[in-house]
Amino acid sequence: MNFFYICLQEYVYNRLQFSYGWYFTFVQGFVYLVLIYLQGFTIKQKVNPWKTYVKLSAVLMGSHGLTKGSLAYLNYPAQIMFKSTKVLPVMIMGAFIPGLRRKYPVHEYISAVLLVVGLILFTLADANTSPNFSVIGVLMILGALVMDSFLGNLQEAIFTMNPDTTQMEMLFCSTLIGLPFLLPPMILTGELFKAWNSCAEHPYVYGVLVFEAMATFIGQVSVLSLIAIFGAATTAMITTARKAVTLLLSYLIFTKPLTEQHGSGLLLIAMGIILKIVPDTKPPNQAVGSSTQGRNHPKKVKTPENGADEEDEEKRPLV
Image (tube, rainbow, N blue to C red; front, side, top):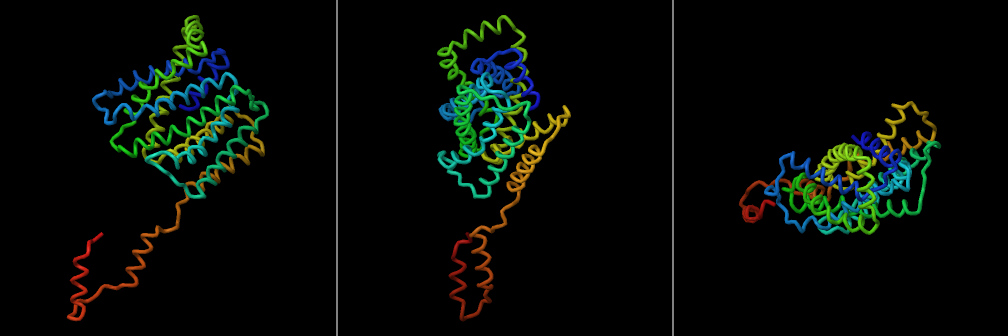
């Protein structure tokens, strides 16, 4: 689905020269609502108040709009370079989000850095698709990264505070509340009327946008499921690794030559993934204390001499 989504993005932004990120996100939001309705979700199934999703909706729409709009000023390799670093701000911001206060061990930060550097090396290895930078595009993608650092952590915080929250509820509420946030940037930039007129002249663009929204919808539900199970930082690492797999498949499918720099990038990516999945062998302090106490204090045999001690131990709580 990710490869299909990339192809649609390249077609709309490069072939058709339509650079209306805010408007396309607006259209995509309505497609999301229709797809969620077809999944059988209703407002009666909502378990969180509407105010829970206000901040999440703002950063969600900001991230999507800035990411899509940046493609008008950056080519795909340049966007990959910036978006691949998302895992680092997500991990850092997790320490400041109320309800999370995540603290990651050092080896997870090292794993994230290896993954990011490896993906950047792999992206830069192809001289024919070197990154194309623009000041406006860089500012937009940096703004999207700031939004992303809040997005995954806010989603994880909602899942943590209320485990009954479903992926469909979160996507429905954040989309419905977020659509009005897209109107100010569309009106202030004049994109609303430009995009409306351009799409009216080429109505088949809406068909492309619907297919793109369907592809991203499946991706969004999958990402929310990962966040609910593994957390925001692990999900960001998975999506970063997914980008590497997508790029590698494009080279294998279209038989592009792989250079030494490609190999170095893949090696760093593999090292980062392995370092992440290797379990921490350090035992918890509580477990160590319990086992030590068990070894130092063997079970007593009830005798008249220690009868009082036995009664005291029976009165102690089990936990």
